Amino acid sequence: MKQSATQTHADALAAAVVGLVGEVVSRPAASRPSEVSAGIEGLLEQILEQVTLIASREDAVPMAVGRQEAARLLGVGVDFFDEHVAPEVSVVRRGRRVLVPRAELERWLSTHAEAPAWD
Image 1 (cartoon, one colour):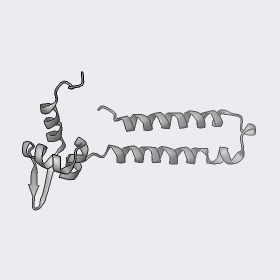
Image 2 (cartoon, helix red, strand yellow):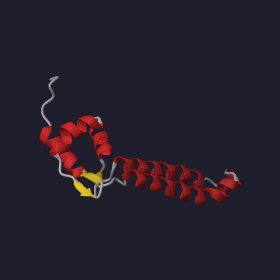
Image 3 (tube, rainbow, N blue to C red):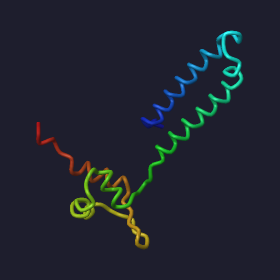
Image 4 (cartoon, one colour):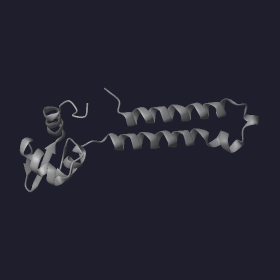
């Protein structure tokens, strides 16, 4: 499974924290403050839990979004989305709720992609 950029950064941060803590812990006990020795394991565990939590929140991506979020993801306004994109994408309707699958947004983009005009 491919890692997201956020997870890669979280892993790098965790590795850096582990490395720094490892340096402190590897020093002889007499050369480090006793409060550092006593709390280093708990602190490291808390940091790793928080990094993992943050990464998992950012990676939680919905499979479908409403029209405002769909417009935001495409970098356009809702009016543009309604006029130019919505007629060309499949949606899921349940009650009043209309969801646009992210795969449909990606399909729409790839269908309309062309060489840049500024080249």
